[in-house]
Amino acid sequence: MFFIGIFGIDKKNEEIKALHDTVCRECSCSSCTLYREYYRFHFFFIPLITWGKKYRVVCESCGTVFNVSEEKDSYSYWELNNILFRGHHTQPCYDGRGGNEETGSSICPNCGAEADVSWVYCPSCGKKLQ
Image (cartoon, rainbow, N blue to C red):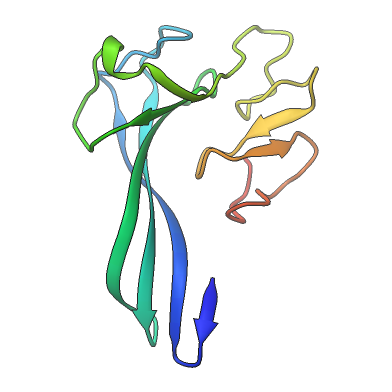
């Protein structure tokens, strides 16, 4: 968040909806969620202008994050080809937060940033890492 007097710029990450008809390319489960990231200019915390929208599909089972071009109700197998972060869905390594205990990494379900597995909050967006 950046303030100039009474004006400011925020980076927002928000969960849009659960995608029950979308199948993950990595683990073939259907528990995916669509997220939107964007910047906004505000005046006294009233949003005036938004820009830089990016959409991401996050598999809640394995933690893989896919970049997608637009907001839709479901995505086909072929639309989930641009992988931002490849999750780990093998049972001994899975830590429940979409990360890998062997490498010490975790993925934030809110913004998709990589975080240390011992951290409670995401260093990028500040949300709790489950």
